[in-house]
Image 1 (tube, helix red, strand yellow):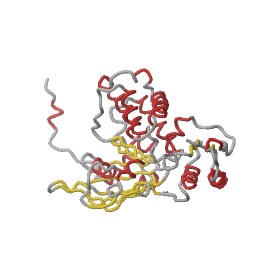
Image 2 (tube, rainbow, N blue to C red; image 1 turned 60 degrees about the horizontal axis):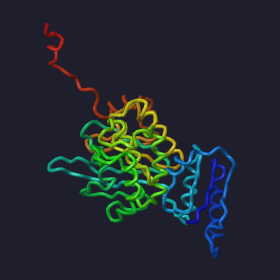
Image 3 (cartoon, rainbow, N blue to C red; image 1 turned 180 degrees about the horizontal axis):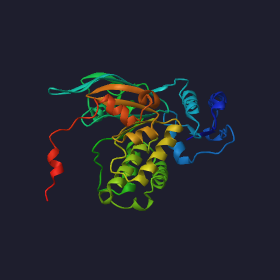
Image 4 (tube, rainbow, N blue to C red; image 1 turned 90 degrees about the vertical axis):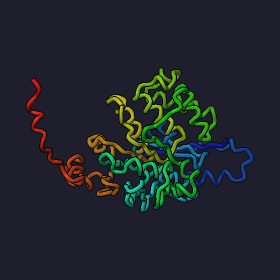
Length: 341
Protein backbone atom coordinates (compact mmCIF):
# COMPACT_ATOMS: atom_id res chain seq x y z
CA UNK A 1 0.00 0.00 0.00
CA UNK A 2 1.27 3.46 -0.91
CA UNK A 3 2.25 5.34 2.19
CA UNK A 4 3.65 8.77 2.79
CA UNK A 5 5.26 9.78 6.01
CA UNK A 6 4.72 13.18 7.51
CA UNK A 7 7.00 14.22 10.34
CA UNK A 8 5.86 17.22 12.37
CA UNK A 9 7.28 19.00 15.38
CA UNK A 10 5.67 22.27 16.46
CA UNK A 11 2.43 24.17 16.25
CA UNK A 12 4.06 26.86 14.12
CA UNK A 13 4.12 24.45 11.19
CA UNK A 14 0.43 23.58 11.06
CA UNK A 15 -0.15 25.47 7.82
CA UNK A 16 2.89 23.90 6.19
CA UNK A 17 1.70 20.46 7.25
CA UNK A 18 -1.71 21.04 5.68
CA UNK A 19 -0.13 22.21 2.41
CA UNK A 20 2.37 19.36 2.38
CA UNK A 21 -0.28 16.67 2.76
CA UNK A 22 -2.54 18.32 0.19
CA UNK A 23 0.32 18.60 -2.31
CA UNK A 24 1.31 14.97 -1.81
CA UNK A 25 -2.25 13.79 -2.32
CA UNK A 26 -2.55 15.91 -5.48
CA UNK A 27 0.71 14.49 -6.81
CA UNK A 28 -0.62 10.99 -6.27
CA UNK A 29 -3.31 11.51 -8.93
CA UNK A 30 -2.31 9.90 -12.21
CA UNK A 31 0.73 8.12 -10.79
CA UNK A 32 1.04 4.65 -12.30
CA UNK A 33 2.77 3.10 -9.33
CA UNK A 34 1.77 4.29 -5.87
CA UNK A 35 5.04 3.03 -4.46
CA UNK A 36 6.87 5.67 -6.51
CA UNK A 37 5.68 8.38 -4.12
CA UNK A 38 8.55 9.80 -2.06
CA UNK A 39 8.36 10.27 1.69
CA UNK A 40 7.41 13.76 2.82
CA UNK A 41 9.30 15.13 5.83
CA UNK A 42 8.10 18.32 7.49
CA UNK A 43 10.35 19.92 10.12
CA UNK A 44 13.55 18.49 11.52
CA UNK A 45 13.02 17.73 15.21
CA UNK A 46 13.29 14.87 17.65
CA UNK A 47 10.55 12.32 17.04
CA UNK A 48 8.35 10.44 19.42
CA UNK A 49 8.86 6.72 19.14
CA UNK A 50 6.89 4.80 16.51
CA UNK A 51 4.64 3.11 19.03
CA UNK A 52 3.28 6.42 20.28
CA UNK A 53 2.83 7.69 16.73
CA UNK A 54 0.80 4.65 15.76
CA UNK A 55 -1.46 5.25 18.74
CA UNK A 56 -1.92 8.92 17.91
CA UNK A 57 -3.71 9.17 14.58
CA UNK A 58 -5.92 6.62 13.00
CA UNK A 59 -7.40 4.77 10.24
CA UNK A 60 -9.56 7.30 8.50
CA UNK A 61 -6.57 7.81 6.20
CA UNK A 62 -4.52 4.60 6.16
CA UNK A 63 -2.16 6.11 3.58
CA UNK A 64 -0.96 8.76 6.03
CA UNK A 65 1.29 8.06 8.98
CA UNK A 66 2.06 11.02 11.20
CA UNK A 67 4.79 11.17 13.82
CA UNK A 68 4.29 13.98 16.31
CA UNK A 69 6.07 15.47 19.28
CA UNK A 70 4.52 16.18 22.68
CA UNK A 71 3.46 19.71 21.69
CA UNK A 72 1.23 18.48 18.93
CA UNK A 73 -2.55 18.59 19.50
CA UNK A 74 -2.96 21.40 16.96
CA UNK A 75 -0.83 19.56 14.42
CA UNK A 76 -2.81 16.40 15.04
CA UNK A 77 -5.99 18.30 14.27
CA UNK A 78 -4.42 19.77 11.12
CA UNK A 79 -3.24 16.37 9.94
CA UNK A 80 -6.65 14.86 10.61
CA UNK A 81 -8.30 17.69 8.70
CA UNK A 82 -5.96 17.37 5.71
CA UNK A 83 -6.14 13.60 5.58
CA UNK A 84 -9.93 13.51 5.69
CA UNK A 85 -10.51 16.05 2.94
CA UNK A 86 -10.92 19.00 5.29
CA UNK A 87 -13.66 17.41 7.40
CA UNK A 88 -12.36 18.00 10.89
CA UNK A 89 -14.27 16.76 13.93
CA UNK A 90 -12.72 18.86 16.70
CA UNK A 91 -15.36 17.47 19.06
CA UNK A 92 -14.43 13.81 19.39
CA UNK A 93 -17.25 12.91 21.79
CA UNK A 94 -20.64 14.60 22.05
CA UNK A 95 -23.20 13.36 24.58
CA UNK A 96 -26.65 14.96 24.61
CA UNK A 97 -29.55 14.30 26.98
CA UNK A 98 -28.41 10.82 28.00
CA UNK A 99 -30.80 9.04 30.37
CA UNK A 100 -31.13 5.52 31.76
CA UNK A 101 -33.61 4.08 34.24
CA UNK A 102 -33.51 0.69 35.95
CA UNK A 103 -37.02 -0.02 37.25
CA UNK A 104 -37.73 2.85 39.65
CA UNK A 105 -34.13 4.03 39.83
CA UNK A 106 -33.03 6.87 37.55
CA UNK A 107 -29.36 5.98 37.09
CA UNK A 108 -28.49 8.68 34.55
CA UNK A 109 -30.59 11.85 34.44
CA UNK A 110 -29.96 13.76 31.22
CA UNK A 111 -26.19 14.00 30.96
CA UNK A 112 -24.60 16.38 28.43
CA UNK A 113 -20.88 16.17 27.72
CA UNK A 114 -18.50 17.51 25.08
CA UNK A 115 -14.93 16.25 24.74
CA UNK A 116 -12.48 17.70 22.21
CA UNK A 117 -9.38 16.46 20.41
CA UNK A 118 -6.45 16.07 22.82
CA UNK A 119 -8.54 16.31 26.01
CA UNK A 120 -7.61 14.14 28.99
CA UNK A 121 -11.06 14.01 30.58
CA UNK A 122 -11.75 12.59 34.02
CA UNK A 123 -15.18 11.57 35.31
CA UNK A 124 -15.45 11.32 39.08
CA UNK A 125 -18.32 10.58 41.43
CA UNK A 126 -19.33 8.48 44.45
CA UNK A 127 -20.32 4.83 44.17
CA UNK A 128 -23.66 4.51 42.42
CA UNK A 129 -23.39 7.95 40.82
CA UNK A 130 -23.91 6.62 37.30
CA UNK A 131 -20.34 6.77 35.99
CA UNK A 132 -20.13 3.20 34.70
CA UNK A 133 -23.67 3.35 33.30
CA UNK A 134 -22.77 6.54 31.44
CA UNK A 135 -19.55 5.10 30.00
CA UNK A 136 -21.38 1.91 29.01
CA UNK A 137 -23.89 3.95 27.01
CA UNK A 138 -21.15 6.10 25.47
CA UNK A 139 -19.34 3.02 24.18
CA UNK A 140 -22.44 1.25 22.86
CA UNK A 141 -22.45 -1.48 25.50
CA UNK A 142 -25.76 -0.33 27.01
CA UNK A 143 -28.66 1.24 25.14
CA UNK A 144 -29.89 4.52 26.67
CA UNK A 145 -33.56 5.26 27.25
CA UNK A 146 -33.06 8.60 25.53
CA UNK A 147 -30.29 10.86 24.33
CA UNK A 148 -27.58 10.74 21.69
CA UNK A 149 -23.89 9.84 21.61
CA UNK A 150 -21.71 10.90 18.67
CA UNK A 151 -18.07 9.79 18.32
CA UNK A 152 -16.00 11.62 15.69
CA UNK A 153 -19.13 12.49 13.74
CA UNK A 154 -20.74 9.02 13.90
CA UNK A 155 -23.78 8.21 16.03
CA UNK A 156 -23.02 5.28 18.33
CA UNK A 157 -26.47 3.76 17.85
CA UNK A 158 -27.39 4.59 14.24
CA UNK A 159 -23.85 4.08 12.86
CA UNK A 160 -22.21 1.78 15.42
CA UNK A 161 -19.52 0.30 13.17
CA UNK A 162 -18.04 3.69 12.28
CA UNK A 163 -18.33 5.01 15.83
CA UNK A 164 -16.74 1.96 17.43
CA UNK A 165 -13.93 1.90 14.89
CA UNK A 166 -12.77 5.18 16.41
CA UNK A 167 -12.94 3.94 20.02
CA UNK A 168 -10.80 1.84 22.29
CA UNK A 169 -12.65 0.63 25.39
CA UNK A 170 -11.60 -0.66 28.80
CA UNK A 171 -14.93 -1.59 30.44
CA UNK A 172 -15.82 -2.08 34.08
CA UNK A 173 -15.46 -5.65 35.38
CA UNK A 174 -13.73 -6.60 32.15
CA UNK A 175 -13.75 -10.21 31.05
CA UNK A 176 -10.93 -11.33 28.79
CA UNK A 177 -10.34 -14.52 26.85
CA UNK A 178 -7.97 -15.58 29.60
CA UNK A 179 -7.19 -19.01 28.11
CA UNK A 180 -5.21 -17.20 25.44
CA UNK A 181 -1.66 -16.03 25.95
CA UNK A 182 -1.03 -12.31 26.09
CA UNK A 183 0.40 -12.43 22.58
CA UNK A 184 -2.63 -14.29 21.25
CA UNK A 185 -5.03 -11.88 22.94
CA UNK A 186 -3.39 -8.84 21.34
CA UNK A 187 -3.13 -10.60 17.97
CA UNK A 188 -6.81 -11.46 17.82
CA UNK A 189 -7.78 -8.01 19.12
CA UNK A 190 -5.88 -6.48 16.22
CA UNK A 191 -7.20 -8.92 13.61
CA UNK A 192 -10.78 -8.35 14.76
CA UNK A 193 -10.14 -4.63 14.25
CA UNK A 194 -9.22 -5.31 10.62
CA UNK A 195 -5.45 -4.88 10.88
CA UNK A 196 -2.95 -6.90 8.85
CA UNK A 197 -1.16 -9.67 10.74
CA UNK A 198 2.32 -8.20 10.30
CA UNK A 199 1.18 -4.82 11.61
CA UNK A 200 -0.57 -6.47 14.57
CA UNK A 201 2.61 -8.33 15.53
CA UNK A 202 4.67 -5.14 15.35
CA UNK A 203 2.20 -3.14 17.39
CA UNK A 204 1.86 -5.99 19.91
CA UNK A 205 5.61 -5.99 20.42
CA UNK A 206 5.65 -2.20 20.82
CA UNK A 207 2.80 -2.28 23.33
CA UNK A 208 4.30 -5.18 25.29
CA UNK A 209 7.54 -3.24 25.63
CA UNK A 210 5.76 -0.02 26.58
CA UNK A 211 3.68 -1.75 29.27
CA UNK A 212 6.54 -3.93 30.53
CA UNK A 213 4.83 -7.17 29.50
CA UNK A 214 7.51 -8.66 27.21
CA UNK A 215 8.26 -11.63 29.47
CA UNK A 216 4.56 -12.33 30.07
CA UNK A 217 3.36 -12.43 26.46
CA UNK A 218 3.85 -16.19 26.19
CA UNK A 219 1.87 -16.93 29.36
CA UNK A 220 -1.87 -17.48 29.67
CA UNK A 221 -3.77 -14.36 30.70
CA UNK A 222 -5.48 -16.37 33.46
CA UNK A 223 -2.08 -16.54 35.18
CA UNK A 224 -1.60 -12.76 35.11
CA UNK A 225 -1.84 -10.60 38.21
CA UNK A 226 -4.69 -8.09 38.41
CA UNK A 227 -2.38 -5.28 37.35
CA UNK A 228 -0.96 -7.23 34.41
CA UNK A 229 -4.48 -8.14 33.29
CA UNK A 230 -5.46 -4.47 33.33
CA UNK A 231 -2.38 -3.55 31.29
CA UNK A 232 -2.88 -6.20 28.60
CA UNK A 233 -6.56 -5.19 28.36
CA UNK A 234 -5.52 -1.57 27.87
CA UNK A 235 -3.01 -2.65 25.22
CA UNK A 236 -5.81 -4.52 23.41
CA UNK A 237 -7.93 -1.36 23.54
CA UNK A 238 -5.13 0.68 21.96
CA UNK A 239 -3.84 -1.68 19.29
CA UNK A 240 -5.98 -0.29 16.46
CA UNK A 241 -4.83 3.28 17.20
CA UNK A 242 -8.24 4.73 18.16
CA UNK A 243 -9.05 8.43 18.21
CA UNK A 244 -10.82 8.04 21.56
CA UNK A 245 -10.02 5.87 24.58
CA UNK A 246 -12.84 5.28 27.09
CA UNK A 247 -11.45 3.73 30.26
CA UNK A 248 -13.52 2.71 33.28
CA UNK A 249 -11.31 2.64 36.39
CA UNK A 250 -8.07 1.93 34.46
CA UNK A 251 -5.91 2.24 37.59
CA UNK A 252 -7.93 -0.06 39.84
CA UNK A 253 -5.75 -2.93 41.16
CA UNK A 254 -2.69 -1.45 39.43
CA UNK A 255 0.47 -0.99 41.50
CA UNK A 256 2.09 2.49 41.66
CA UNK A 257 4.93 1.63 39.25
CA UNK A 258 2.55 0.20 36.66
CA UNK A 259 0.19 3.15 37.19
CA UNK A 260 3.05 5.54 36.43
CA UNK A 261 3.81 3.62 33.22
CA UNK A 262 0.18 3.67 32.11
CA UNK A 263 -0.11 7.37 32.96
CA UNK A 264 2.97 8.19 30.88
CA UNK A 265 1.64 6.26 27.87
CA UNK A 266 -1.78 7.92 28.10
CA UNK A 267 -0.26 11.40 28.46
CA UNK A 268 1.84 10.91 25.33
CA UNK A 269 -1.18 9.56 23.48
CA UNK A 270 -3.27 12.62 24.42
CA UNK A 271 -0.42 15.05 23.72
CA UNK A 272 -0.12 13.62 20.20
CA UNK A 273 -3.79 14.24 19.43
CA UNK A 274 -5.54 11.24 20.97
CA UNK A 275 -8.38 11.76 23.43
CA UNK A 276 -8.87 10.01 26.78
CA UNK A 277 -12.04 9.76 28.87
CA UNK A 278 -11.63 7.87 32.14
CA UNK A 279 -13.43 7.31 35.40
CA UNK A 280 -11.63 6.95 38.70
CA UNK A 281 -12.18 7.13 42.45
CA UNK A 282 -8.70 8.58 42.95
CA UNK A 283 -9.15 12.34 43.13
CA UNK A 284 -5.43 12.98 43.48
CA UNK A 285 -4.65 10.95 40.37
CA UNK A 286 -7.38 12.63 38.30
CA UNK A 287 -6.19 16.05 39.44
CA UNK A 288 -2.62 15.21 38.42
CA UNK A 289 -3.22 13.71 34.99
CA UNK A 290 -6.49 15.16 33.64
CA UNK A 291 -6.95 18.62 32.13
CA UNK A 292 -10.77 18.43 32.16
CA UNK A 293 -13.12 16.85 34.68
CA UNK A 294 -16.82 16.22 35.27
CA UNK A 295 -18.31 15.55 38.71
CA UNK A 296 -21.26 13.14 38.53
CA UNK A 297 -23.64 12.75 41.49
CA UNK A 298 -26.98 10.91 41.37
CA UNK A 299 -26.83 10.58 37.61
CA UNK A 300 -26.28 14.30 36.97
CA UNK A 301 -23.21 16.35 36.13
CA UNK A 302 -22.90 18.95 38.91
CA UNK A 303 -19.74 20.56 37.53
CA UNK A 304 -17.63 20.16 34.41
CA UNK A 305 -14.93 22.07 32.60
CA UNK A 306 -11.19 22.52 32.89
CA UNK A 307 -9.58 21.20 36.04
CA UNK A 308 -8.95 24.71 37.36
CA UNK A 309 -12.54 25.79 36.68
CA UNK A 310 -14.03 22.84 38.54
CA UNK A 311 -11.57 22.97 41.44
CA UNK A 312 -12.27 26.68 42.01
CA UNK A 313 -9.11 27.16 44.04
CA UNK A 314 -9.58 24.01 46.13
CA UNK A 315 -8.22 20.51 45.75
CA UNK A 316 -10.37 18.29 43.55
CA UNK A 317 -11.15 16.10 46.55
CA UNK A 318 -12.38 19.04 48.64
CA UNK A 319 -14.42 20.37 45.74
CA UNK A 320 -15.87 16.92 45.10
CA UNK A 321 -16.93 16.51 48.74
CA UNK A 322 -18.50 19.96 48.64
CA UNK A 323 -20.48 19.18 45.48
CA UNK A 324 -21.49 15.73 46.72
CA UNK A 325 -23.09 17.16 49.86
CA UNK A 326 -20.24 17.42 52.34
CA UNK A 327 -18.98 14.99 54.93
CA UNK A 328 -21.61 12.83 56.58
CA UNK A 329 -21.76 13.22 60.35
CA UNK A 330 -21.37 9.84 62.00
CA UNK A 331 -23.09 9.41 65.36
CA UNK A 332 -23.81 6.42 67.52
CA UNK A 333 -20.39 4.81 67.10
CA UNK A 334 -19.00 5.80 70.49
CA UNK A 335 -18.80 2.10 71.36
CA UNK A 336 -15.85 1.86 68.97
CA UNK A 337 -13.77 3.65 71.61
CA UNK A 338 -14.63 1.15 74.35
CA UNK A 339 -12.47 -1.57 72.79
CA UNK A 340 -12.93 -5.18 73.77
CA UNK A 341 -10.15 -5.90 76.22
